[in-house]
Length: 464
Image (tube, rainbow, N blue to C red):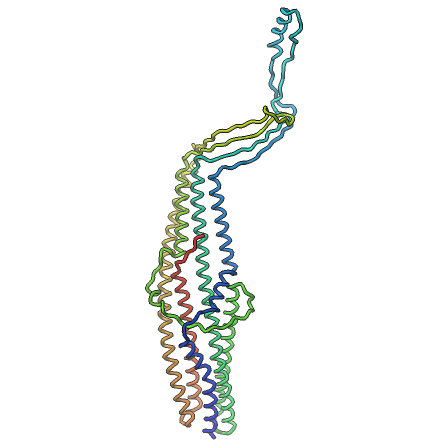
C-alpha cells in the first residue's frame, strides 16, 4: 500500500513540477529578443507622464523668457495720447497794451488817422484747456549692460531647464524599467508558487489518506497543512506585489491604475556589463551640466553687479500732434528726438552689497557643484558594487537550482522505492521551490540594478 501511494504521489508531483522547472529554464536560456512591451511602456511614459509634461512646460517658459530678453535689443514703439481740461490756476501776464499803445497813439497823430487801435494787456492761463497731445514714441537702447547680461542669464536658464528635463527623462526610464521588472519578478513567482500550491495540496490529500489507512503519522498531516498555508501566504504576497507593481507602472505612463499589464519574458543581457563597470561619471552628466548652468548664471550676475557704473544710453524719437480744440494741421504736427543718459552716482552702498551677495552665491553654487559630483561618484560606486553582488548572487542561485533539481530527483527516486520518507520529499520540494524563486528574483533584481546603473551613467542631453 505504501508503494502504491508513493508511486501515485511521486508521478503526480513530477508532473506538477515540470511547468515550474520549465519556466526557470526558459528564464535562464531564453534567446535575446526585442523587449517590445517594455519599450512600448517607455515610449508611452515619455509621451504621457504628467511630471515630464510639467518639466517640458517649464522649458517652454524658459525659451519664451529668452525671446523676451532678446527683444530688448530691438527698437520698441509705443503710442500715447493725453487730453486736458483746465480752469483757474496760475497765469502769466503779457503787457502788450502798455508797450504798444503809446506807439500806436503817436502813429495815429502822425498819420491823422485811427489805423492803429488801442489793445489790451494779455493774461494767459498756464494750465492748458481743451488741449490734446498724441504721439508715437520709438526708443532704442545704445548702451545697456543689463540687457546683455540678462540675455546671457536667460540662455543659461534655458539650458538648466533642458537639463532638468533630461534628468527626469532618464529617471523616468529607470523607474519604468524597475517597475516592469518588479512586475515580471512577482508574476514569475506566482507561476512557480501556483505549481507549488498544487503540489502541497496534493501532498496534504495523500498524507491524510495515508494516516486514515494507518500508514502515516498525524504529525505529517500537521506538517503538510503548515506547508500549504505557508505557500498560500507566499502566493498572496506575490499577487499583491504584482498588483502594486502594475499600478505603479500604469501611474508612471499615465494609464488607468487598474489596467492590466502584459507579461513579457525579458532575458538578461550582460554584453555591456564590463564596460559599464569601468565607466565613471562624465562631464556630460545632466546633473553636472545643470550645476554648471547654475554656476554660469551666478558668474553672470556677479559680472553684471560689478559693471553697475557703466552708463546707460538710449535714444528716442516722437512723431505726433498736439494742439487746442482738436486742431490737426501743419502747425500741430511735430517730430522730436533725443538721447538719454543715466549714470549711478550714489545709491547708499547697495551696489557693493549686491556684489558681495553674488560672490557668496557663487561660492555656494561651487560648493554644491562639488558636493553633487561627490554624491554622483559615490552613488555610482555603490551601484556598481550592488551589481557585482547581485551577479554573484544570481550565479549562486543558478547553482543552487541545479543542485536542488538534482536532489529532488534523487529523493523522488528514493521515495518511489520506499527508502525516503514523505517529510524528506517535502523538504526536497521546498528546497527546489526556494531555489527556483531565488533564481527568478535574483535575475530580475540584477536587471533592476543594471537599469539603475545605466541611469547613473546617463550622459544624454537634448538641447532645445
